[in-house]
Image 1 (cartoon, rainbow, N blue to C red):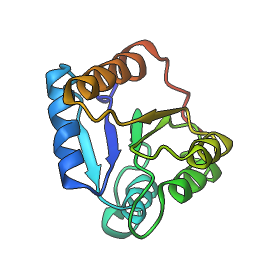
Image 2: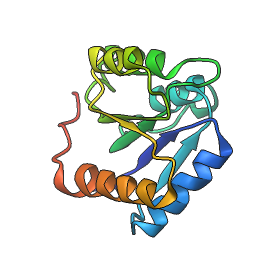
Image 3: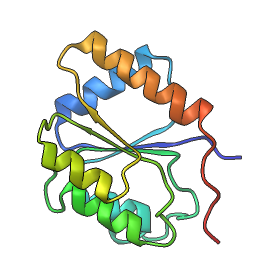
Length: 147
């Protein structure tokens, strides 16, 4: 079985670094693939564009998705993930600083598995990321691959 990969879709370099530090501090050593805009996320997942030829059967075990992204918004990425046969079952967690109730409602309407607001405090962020890792990468049974 291949390692459980985490896809981080985040355009803010500070938040990428913060997430990497939090994963390391939480002893989550899974491979982390970072993409910096919504179109790149879709290209990675669907194996097109810069990721043409990528083994698309090797999907991330967990996708951490920001909402405010360049090119394609996080909600549009989620919408596309859920409409594609090959990606519709992958666990997606919205990890955002948005406090907009409409963003949360839209995320759940589109089939997000979880919605987490980024804590401002680093220690709380580490704790949140550790709990995410424990649940999604250790406890949760991943969905069967679409055939």
